[in-house]
Amino acid sequence: MGLDLDYVDGQTPLDEDEKEGLLIRTIATRGELDEFEQQNIENAMQYYWSRRIKFEKFFTEDFMREVHRRMYADVWKWAGEFRKTDKNIGVDKWQIPTDLKNLLDDALYWVKNNVYSPEEIAIRFKHRLVSIHCFPNGNGRHSRFMADLLWYRVYKEDEPFSWGAANLVKQGDQRAAYLKAIRDADTGDIQPLIKFAKS
Image (cartoon, rainbow, N blue to C red; front, side):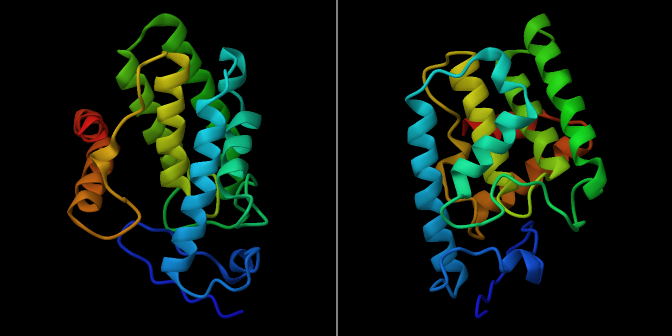
């Protein structure tokens, strides 16, 4: 297959087997892939913005997988499936279900007991989710969207986070700021990521 992908800082390379899951065979470049993925993601956003999400359903593995599937099912055969390979970031592939269950249980506890402010819960949730790296591709976009859904649907806030109002898939100052905020959160300082999400 002729898919030639250039990766920018922080992107996880796809294995050849994962590339074989591409459903649109005419895609040949990163730019074309980004365009088709973005269209699919926008369709998923419209779907979830227009529907109520039951509180109990949000904090389940099935819902995490369902959202990823809706975001990428028009582009990738493996959309919604946990990765079967280890990557340069994320937990070992065998730990994904356990680590995700621990995160979902923790987040549900945070929400029910007001452990943090709503915005901090959403961003802590996003950070832990992207750190697990459940899927072969799209983990950053999926985790940001899940934070938006938590903020917008569970907490009923007026609108989702802005995430710097930039395309974070492309290399640039906003992506660099985002990655720095993620790395700060890795060391325990969640505030820069909260600030970035609201910028």
